[in-house]
Length: 326
Length: 285
Image (cartoon, rainbow over all chains, first blue to last red; front, side, top):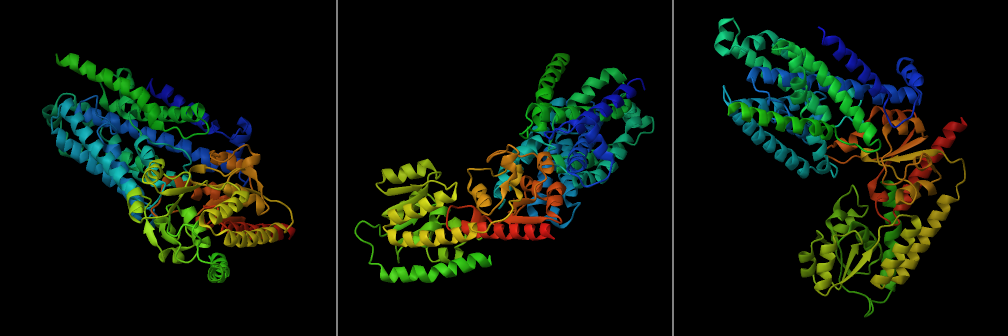
């Protein structure tokens, strides 16, 4: 609980800063007033239709990535598990791109997030099958590399085959992610699946705590391992699928956040879940503020910043795992 | 669409008449011409003599960008590749200055004359391109006639005075057209103030959605979206852009009359001028 308050305050402050960051220079009081007061004036349009959905999506997607990273690491007992690294985000992006290019997304509103969910589900199942039930770090990462390169290649192929002249240049969006020019439509598109996924992942706490003692002990304590795995797989696919469908694949959030918060919550994977959700929201908000401050008039991708933080940490974790094995 | 059809119909008989009257191409005029770029395709189809234009690029068959699809069907189609163009044994190849350098260099090495046309960025450039095409095809008289019709129509369109509403041309990914671009000049000639330019954004620059909202233009001109869907074009249907189109004048760029420096740009000027008159009428009410 001592951790909850600072994290909540951080998310709230960053949310506010995100609302106040943008190329249109609007005063603090005026912009907040426009957010709540009615009216059709341009400032209200900027606050409600441009900045609010952007900040909301950053919170939703950040929470999703932090939560699913913590859940996967708890279940696989492997600090390298993360939806971006093991190809779940990439597979979700493939599903989303297919929905857009086949016209499914245009004919049926929820077609986009549902197709991304299907892609993510395929990705999780494939990686877990490749890594095996007691997969080592090595098999997990190798399986993840295979799945993410395959998904990335297929995404690029679909975009290159598209009749739309802009599609091929969007490979970088699907691989790096961005929240530029999103609207409330995207919030409503992502929210239903995310709520389902959050509920499933939040219910994993007790099972993950028990799993520290090993699978046999967990089963002896009455944890249904098959059900736990199903909740993890479907929950992860829901949150990552919905997030990727509207913002592209944003990597490393699910790796960095649980790693930083783990020492603070002690050896409780269950407690790490909600802490990582808050931490993830703060990290994506921060990254999204940074891309707007660093290059205000260009769309710097979020994944660039998260990878700059995340990739060195990933290397550090690999080196540590290697030492421990020796 | 109808405007394009009218223009084509208006030009076709005249072009036919010129073809029968004018003598067959002299020794200097190339007898077998291949065009490998949409913009040179269009100008060549408007100006070439009977049987002079052998092949046009496949872009000419795409109704999204080509106003002369029917005309293009009567020619061989090329894909802008050096090998296929060489095998057509052309006397002259028409290319854009932005056509792949390697292709142009290869054709020149093979001893084929290549004439390159710079993309037009003003209506004045369009006039130059018409004359350039007339010169390289040996069809100066046809070019003079086309230019005279172009000037007359432009003068008629510009004679229309009135208040100048503020407009932004908003492309996929939030790019705007400023001064010194063909679409910016079309906007200017149609009697609009370029609000993007006034806000400090010029061609090739991205005007953030927020800035567009605060600029509060009278008109947002957007490009028609291509099939297949893309995230780049999603910004054109963002609620903020939609809000500017709802209850206000909206105009869509039909690439076929906006994209190339050909006489068809006057269709775009005419369409926009019509939108301006509607704005003026509404504000007068």
